[in-house]
Amino acid sequence: MTAGTRALLEFDDSYARELPSLCVPWTAAPVPSPELLVLNAELATELGAEPEALTGPEGLALLVGQVPDGVSPVAQAYAGHQFGMYVPRLGDGRALLLGEVPDRHGRRRDVHLKGSGRTPFARGGDGKATVGPMLREYLMGEAMHALGIPTTRALAVVATGEEIARETLLPGAVLARVADSHLRVGTFQYAAATGNPALVRTLADHAIARHHPEAAEAPNPYLEFYRRVIDVQAALVARWMLVGFVHGVMNTDNTTISGETIDYGPCAFMDAYDPATVFSSIDHGRRYAYGNQPLIAQWNLTRLGETLLPLIDENTDAAVEAAIDAVEGFTGRYESDWTAGMAAKLGLDAPDPPLTTDLLALLHAQRVDFTQFFRGLSAGSARDLFLDREAFDAWARRREALLPADRAAVAAGMNRVNPVYIPRNHRVEEALTAAVGGDLAPFRRLLDVLTHPFDERPGLDGYAEPGPAGRYVTYCGT
Ligand code: AMP
Ligand code: MG
Image (cartoon, rainbow, N blue to C red; front, side):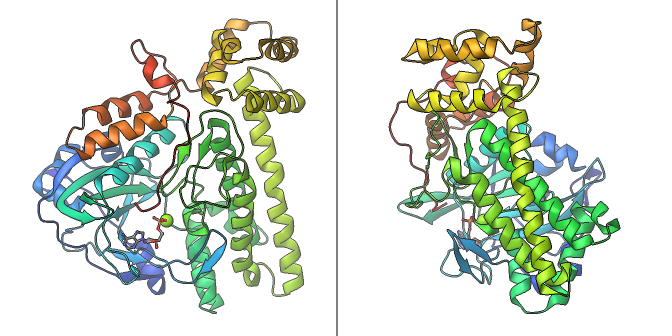
């Protein structure tokens, strides 16, 4: 579709066409007075749109779901284990898939809205979203993208002019986001629960064509597909762990088939190193603590495997054996990515697991900031972060003995993988509070800082430091 001569977005609808029983055609709620808060011009361009076209009236209408003829949004169905409990019917309660857009690299990308009104999956919810959490998703996704971590990305946040009832009245917003797809482990769970194996097969074929086309050539395409999803998820969670990211709500409906990070709700970055770190106000059992994330991802992938058993082998015992073997492969893939990533963070040519283990014990015991430590290590200031400096010195001598000779190259290499700037919790809160009050300047400043996480820039020291100690709590009621 075009607005005059300026390009908006060209939509396809392969999901709705191929999987009609896994979605419901639906229309976005009207928006009284849309006001663009932030547009991701770079991403818009990548999608073949002209940013200026998206900021005009037609573009703005599209970004809140008032679509032109020929575009048919759907609410997607999915199930999921939430905190370990199976919920048979979740789905897009307040979200819509507008369609798929081919990007400039020929990749098919979903354009999806959050906060676009109630759908048949809304259960008790109002179908709405508010400015703070939607800007939060924008910020966290861009920070992750800049760190090189696969993620959905926000295209825009549009304020709706409505007041939404939460604990107080809050300004409403619609988020437009882009993903390689919104296929989730929960999508497979929903399909499997219908009891129709042909539906799971159609879904798997759709997912293979979209994300893992090479699997179609394997002797057992569905087993190979499963292995590849395990692989991308193991790689993803290793990347999270290497930057101290805590997702916060790793339910199976928030676990993608593409291997992208999705659904930035109660997520946050850890300050002082502690595997038990949890931010979410509702995660009483610490199920989704920092240190549990690899195990939880593997648990979620086991739930995916269960849905694929009939496709893997007609003989159930053989299918189970093959699936277990595949999901056990998670550990090796995760460990090798983690140890290689840690070696790079420490400036070593080869992983040294005991050196890493001892370091983490030291960081934990002395409550050293995870991000500051690695950057301080290349800058020569890490020692100052420890109370017991001799303990650090003893560890540092062991590392020294392993370092390659060219120390300048070592430091430069470390600075390419160890960020200076991560979304510090107090900075995120400060920016969002100001934005909800109508002042977007702190948000824009923080977004700019987080978009260049590895480049130390003068005057930004305050963005590199942890906030005041004390437990930071995030809320799911987004
Ligand atoms: P999330 O925590 O964003 O992953 O959402 C979990 C489930 O709750 C999904 O099925 C959402 O669509 C649904 N949901 C969350 N908030 C709302 C809301 N305000 N109205 C309707 N459904 C919602
Ligand atoms: Mg979700």
